[in-house]
Length: 305
Image 1 (cartoon, rainbow, N blue to C red):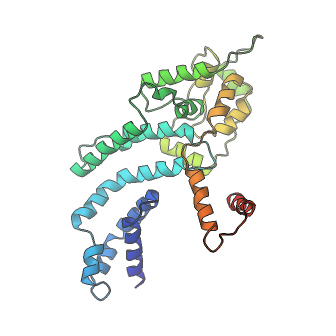
Image 2 (image 1 turned 60 degrees about the horizontal axis):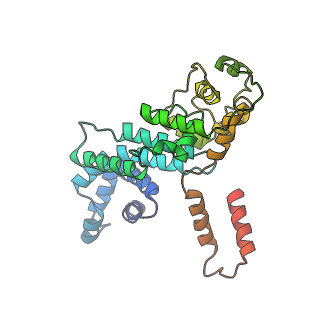
Image 3 (image 1 turned 90 degrees about the vertical axis):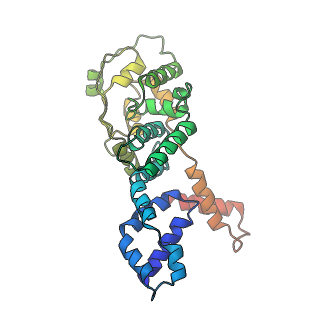
C-alpha cells in the first residue's frame, strides 16, 4: 500500500501542479525513474480498481514523450532555481542563462522527435518574445548592464558580436567621467599583482550558476579606459561578483559605482512572492487578530533565523 500511496501522490502532483512548475519537473524525473514499479502497481487489481488505473496510468507514447522532454525540461528547471536565489546577485545571470538555453539546450537536433522539435521551437520563440532578444534596445537592459559588470559574465558568451559591442558601449556611457587629477594607469598584469587576493569562498547558488554556464574566465587584452581595463582584467570563472568588487573597487572606482547600482537588482519577484506565501500561512482565519507589528516581527524572524 505504501508504493500505491507514492504512485497516487506523485501522479497527483504531476497533474495538479499549476503553481510550482519547478517541483513538477523534479517529480517527473522521480516518477519516470520508477516507471515499471508504478505500472506494475497500477496493473494489480488487488490494489487499484480498473477505473482508477485507467485514469492514473499513461499510454506508452506518453511515457516516451516524457522521456524525450526531460533532457530539455531539466535545464529549464535548473535555470529557474538559479534565478530564484535570494543570497547572491541574480540579475547579471539572466541573459547569459537565457542565451545558453537558446544556443545549446534548445538547439535543433536531427535526432529529436517531432514533438521535441515543436517544443523547442515554441520555447525558443517564447524566450525571444519574452526577453525581446530581437529588439535593438535589449543590450541596454539593466540585466545586460549587470551582466557586463559581473566579472564572471562580462564576456557575454553566447551573445552575438553586435549585441556585445552595443552592451559595452551602453555601459561605457553610464560610467561617470574620471576625476580631473592625473590617474596612474595600471596594466592588467600589475592589477593582478597588486589587487587584494580574491575571495574564493563562493555561495552554493552562485557556484551552481557559474558551473551551469560553463564559463572559462577572461584573459588580458590592451586597455584603453577604465571600462576596457576592467573588461580585460583576468578573473577566475568561479569569482564572486560582490567579493571581487569589494577587493578591486579602488582599481576601477567609476565602474564600481555603476556596478553597485545594478548588481543588486533581483532577477525575479520570487523573494516577495515567498514573503506573501509565508504571510498567508501565518495570518489565517484561526489567527486573524494578530497585530500588524506582531506579523512583521514573526515574518522577520522566519526569514532571518
